[in-house]
Length: 157
Image (cartoon, rainbow, N blue to C red; front, side, top):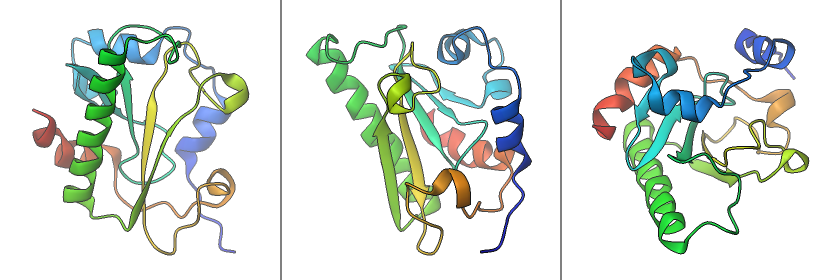
């Protein structure tokens, strides 16, 4: 297997973790472009700064919560509608061959930010790899985060 150097993943894995909630700070950001925030209403939708693949998005509720089971059905439905919207935009703009959409509840399930639930949308292309070994051997698509942000931002306005 060829090894692709993706330094941004190493920075995340070995660096200090944020002490504040990234989704709450994104929601309140004075300059959304600094955190690659695509929209904040009715949900926070942002690019993952340390992506597994090109255009890896995260969708989170505006309010700080980790309790999916206790979430009012109306809020859960609205969030799922925003996940669906984000998936449609990714499909339109990037035309992936597939997509992983997941919600990791709790640290044991793999949540990096367990206190604020969020969905991951990871576009996939034939020949990259499947989702399970993605951490060890993903084929990263060659596009800068800022370019991705500029392509997607108008679709979330």
